[in-house]
Image 1 (cartoon, rainbow, N blue to C red):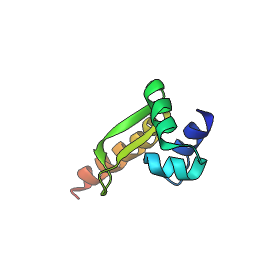
Image 2 (cartoon, rainbow, N blue to C red):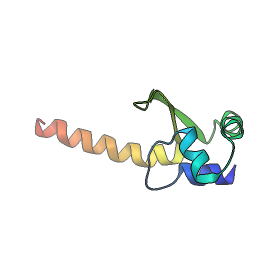
Image 3 (spheres, helix red, strand yellow):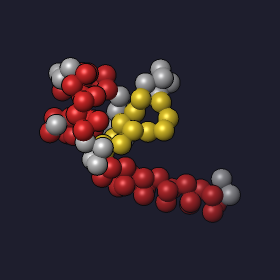
Length: 82
């Protein structure tokens, strides 16, 4: 669980695929899926997929932190008319 959470919190990515996490952690994708299903209080799945149709995941903490930044940026752009 710890390695998966660390991979999800990798600063290079906001959203991660199971394959990306597996490649980084060397953990079997099926085990990653099991850990994710058992830890929905920590891990969230995006409502969107990547361009290959793969599910995307992040941590609630990272989404809260990064999501706030994205909301402020989009509000600033809307307020500028752009």
